[in-house]
Each structure stands twice: as C-alpha cells, then as structure tokens.
Length: 309
Image (cartoon, rainbow, N blue to C red):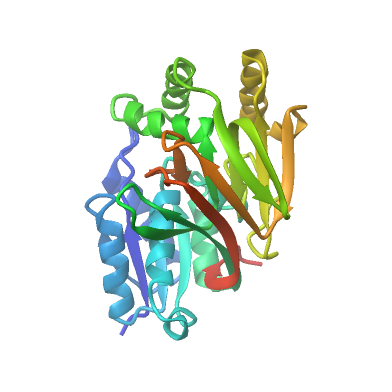
C-alpha cells in the first residue's frame, strides 16, 4: 500500500492550465521516484473531507499541492485526531495557491516546484509549532481554530476579505490586492482593542495586529514556527498618511521600520475588540469573535516535511 497521498488543489490562474500544472508536478514526482496516490479537491470545502479520508485510510505523508488556506484546513484536521495518531503523520506542501507564505518560509515557491518535490523525496521531517485561537461565536458557542502562519486582526484582515471578493473578477494577485486596498480605505480603518501581552494590558485604537507563527505575510518577518513563541506586530491609531506609509512599508517587506509599529514576542495574547473587527486565519477570512478571545502557541505539535539538505 502506498503511504503518500497528494491532494491537488487547482489554482485557476490566468493563462495557466490546471491540467498542465499537474502534469509538471507529476513529471517531477516521477523524476524523484516518489510513489503516491493523488486526489483532486473540488473546492475549498472539500479539502478537510479529503484530508480526513486520507488520515482514516492510513496514509503517513499527506502532501498539499495548494496554498495557505488548504494547508490550514489540513492542520485543523490533524489537530482533531488523537496525538498518538498525529505523531505518525507528516504533512508537506507543493506551493499552488495565490498565497504561499508558509511554503516561502521554507524556501518553496510556486515557480520553483522542483525544490518542494526534492524535499518530499528526501523526507526530512521537523516538528513545528501550531498556533490556536480560542473564541466565542455569535451564537455563543465556544470554538477554536488552529494556524501555522498567522492571524490578522483589523485592516489587513479586511483587505484579505476584500481580496477574495475582488479576485473572483480579477485573478491577478497584485491587482486584487491593490483594488482591495482602495476599497478598504473607504471603510473603517481603526478599531478599539484591549489586549494583554506578557501580563501587560492596554487599550488603544488599532489599525491592524498580526500574530505570527511564521512570516505573517511580511508582518512578522522574524517569527519562526519552532521556538514556542508568537511574534506580534501592532499598528496603533495614527493619521491616515501614517497608515498609507505602513502599507507601503508592508509591501516592501519593511513593516517593522514604521515608527508606529509595536513589535512583541510572547507565548499568548488576549484580545477584545468590537464584533465588526475583521479576522483572518492563515489568509482566510474568519467569523469575528464575540467578547474576549485568546491566541496561544502549542509547541512541536505536528510533523512537517522541510527543505532538502
């Protein structure tokens, strides 16, 4: 029985054939003698169902050919099983999404598919941290959701939500982001937030907060998913031109150079915002928590296939 399964999540990029993209991936898998079974996801909702099926069928290596949101669904499926079973399963990534931020942390990119295939073949595995947000939804039900890259709260989460809406008409990542940014600037930019970090509680009007286990889409560039810590980047209330400057530095990968930025490192953070404050988890828009909620890190929870030596 084969022990490796690849879940192929098609990315309908303009001028790119879904079939030809898979043929390229398959050719590289053959080149590096990777023995596998493949299933294709129908949509975003089907990823969790397929991952659960692969876990139940005894696959030891589950490889996601997709982006951050598909990887997030996989992590949440893994965290739902007993630890004894989870410890015997490895996950890997072949970047094939619009956002491939966690893959980029390990040096894997959409254009250089061969590097991620080489990693799967070499099978170098590392235990990595998983973040968790625990919250109450609008129906009063207590929930949790796991992440491996970042959680965004405020402006950037709003942009990510808008980007998904705009992207249905404009497939370009850069164009959809730019249009989302223009649209979001006509909406609410500041949110009242009470937060507790390292036992200190403060209340401010906040533009955006990123809680990163890894790169955080450029907002937590020093975070690593194996030190048992979360990096937190906070942009407090400022004039509109400061917000524009922060976005400019974010796009350049220099967000920590902004004078209004407050960086922290902690194992957990407690937050309370208004119900209208947007939240995104690993780039995917989430429902907004009601009342206080917490974000913490769980050290060395899952096995991840990292870059080849």
